Image 1 (spheres, one colour):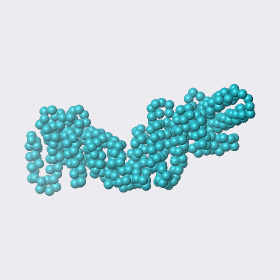
Image 2: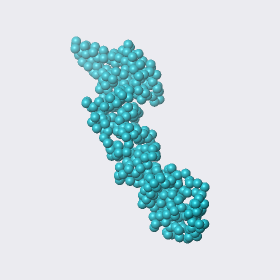
Image 3: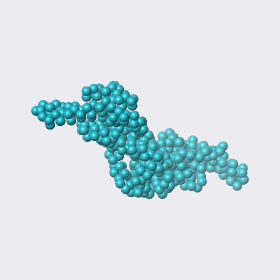
Image 4: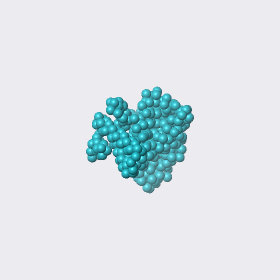
Length: 459
């Protein structure tokens, strides 16, 4: 130990090791004293580099790897760590290992040695763990409690350094910590979300609805993989990445959760008004359409079977309704008022006669909450479509009435009057319907007031 020769004589004194329990106690005390000295001397005493600074190079095991679980690497955490000593960190790590300061040795090696040091520290830690060594720091009173987070975070950090090149290899290192259950699953979720290597890690959906085997299946059961995918999807939702969540939910086979997500996103952007919202609305409409084209085509019943087994058939019905409502709003925006109204009429959301009023109110209350929250936009857009159709028909009738008389013209005017009356009736029923629903406010005034004003324009 270089200048620590005087300390070495302490170990050899007092009759050596073979003195029974008293001899072992003497050795323990000597090791403990030596560990204190090694810590006091610090890295600069052992490293030959002039640039090594004790305060810069080592801050302790916890600080050295605290950010590893977020995907960073231990070596090079700050600019002061960029200079790797010529020994690669071993000049100080070896005395620490000799004095059974295992946690400190591994943390310093990973921190001071850069990428190679991290590789060595992670592998050495795994070997020590397999051999049953407690990765803690020896003290005179008792062995310190093994640093439960050190090895997992070292391995996670090294795994993160590999994931950009080989996600499968990164996974192999994470599963070395199989006894660290929750931590491993959290790191696998991180690996999925950061690499987006969903097919490599979790496979793909087959024509029969099953998921093909992939890297995760070599280490986890089908049920465990599904749980990992769902948990990763939930995390993606929390951090604002619903598109990632949708892909993960498809792979997990949790179609009920997937429909809840798609329905929520479609409803949120149904009445988009900003370019950003339009872009998101188009994304989710396209994603939903692609899902429908792949998984809901004739002959593929696994989605419906899963929803039925989960008791979530209503989610599929809500999905179909929202897809139609997106088309309805697109037609209104393009001023295709007649096709828009025809589509809305076919959806049968509104009463056509007084006798249907109670039934339609009850049907509204049975709708999914995500639809009910945006239903005031639907009612208002429907009334606007009616108003435009009424105005167009009335203007065309005025032009037609300017010609000569005759039976044909009279019949035409009668037909037009009948159609105008039908529009007025539907508008009146829609106003009553909106009042019974007690719809929320919209913009500067109440929805009911705005649609009432539109109805008055048709009188």
